Amino acid sequence: MRWAEISIDVNCKATEAVASIALEYARGGVAIIDPDLAKDPGGEVALSELELAGIPSEGPAVVRFYVDDDEKELTGILSEIRRRLDEEVNRIPGCREVLGISVRMADEKEWSSWKQTFKPFRLGTRMVVTPTWEAPDALPEDIVIRIDPGQAFGTGQHATTANCAFMLESYIEGGERVLDVGTGTGILSIAAALLGAGDVTAVDIDSTAVKCAQENVALNKVQDKVKVIRGDMLKGIEGPFDIVVANILAEPVMSMSASVFGLLVPGGHFISAGYVEKSEAGVRDSLTGAGFEIADRVQDHDWVCLVARRPVK
Image (cartoon, rainbow, N blue to C red):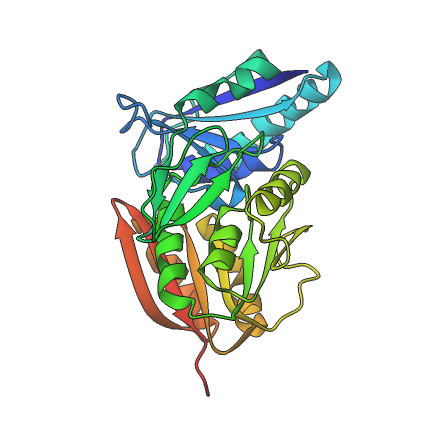
């Protein structure tokens, strides 16, 4: 099968906004190439919905994603994206224009070739993530997570995922009911289950991600604990939950704050990530405005993860 690879060159501080638009059309996920990391092998960061975040650089950065190779559909998508970029991004104060959009065709073999660079890595302090085709380099006491990213993107190597995993290690004591919003490949849901959560609901809007997450859940033999469903953020989700984790953009974190508050038990925690330091103030305001108390914070380079607590009373 062939795919159309769309690359948007961004020379402004609005990478997050561009990526958010791209995510609505992407077949599986969005990759952001950070110019600050471009010289390193890991410079291209593939992110699922739950791992997607803004880039701290002023640019140029590249937002890259795939759509089906259908000429009529592709023409319509490109027209709609150009319109939205002009209306929603190019008019942002202080933001220089998007530099351009390019399209090329990619086949299934090329789509999967990046797997050769995916090696086992540590996640948090107690977990090792390994692709299904590699032997894990793990200690006897380590929790091993096996994953096949497939076409859903997102291997869990990004700082935002690591931050969330660290917080899950800190706040899961055993038996918790957890909601993972924008699960992508399911890595955080699997981590929660293996750390001792009693019940995990993983939700993603993308059918490719849902299928990939279900397969990874089965690979790790936690299907008795983790239920993966297709859905739009919190629509149709029923609580209560002890922990909600959302590794997504700043804007959806802010928009869902009040709803998450209602889904949590008193004393429950909302772990949010996927945004940079410049977006933190807005996220904090939304969380506290919804009634949360900020309980914890971790930062890796420019990437911030906040833990908000619903007060007991």
